[in-house]
Image 1 (tube, helix red, strand yellow):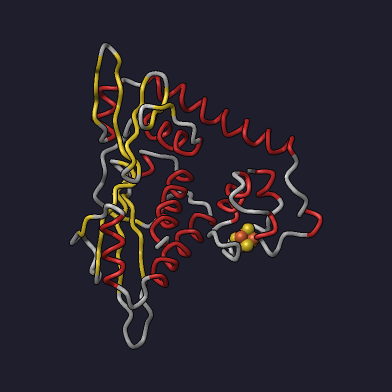
Image 2 (tube, protein in one colour):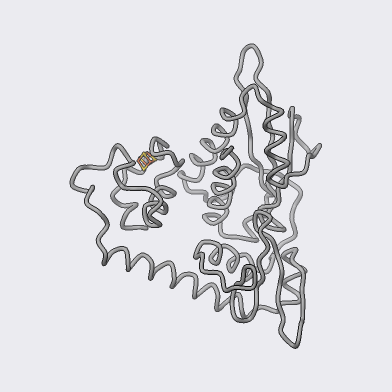
Length: 258
Ligand code: SF4
């Protein structure tokens, strides 16, 4: 991913259809987009990713996932399940933690992560959930809301991503607040009154202790619709900030896919 990223302009302009160059690099690596989808890539960089580089990248993903898996397997399952909002189970002497990501149920066992009783082979799901478990919910949620770009030491691409994600939701549901409400319901959101004065406010649990608050203001005569996404100030105690940005990105992708 880093090799691909180095070849990009790193301006996070969003013209390739994803908000950041980093997210684009991930998609190219996963063969979900082509290098040529970025209109600014120099001709000499347009050659296909070599087999060797692709293998190295897969290996790298696998390596990160394996390292996090080793850490996640070592935690005290009972204590951790309570701290991260999962449920603990012990069946026939085998312990596990059940939790949902985007309403998809996962099970962390001593053998690794399982989905529908089968070992999970999706590297990103594994990396995110292993990181979430190994951090063991180090701090309780604060109840304070901040945007992704306001976490300390947030890289500039995270800030840019946040902006474009909000713009994407606002433009998709401009003058269509009923459509927005319907989509929130489909995605498992719960209407909230919250701390923010907005025309519509909905809470989603990306992971049990990673709430995301979507605030939406309808268009008026002067301004188009706008949207803000908020996270709990202590979310970074539960998950690495880059993985958090990725979770929000995945959420927005799914959300606007109507
Ligand atoms: S990769 Fe995407 S976000 Fe980055 S410069 Fe190219 S078009 Fe813009």
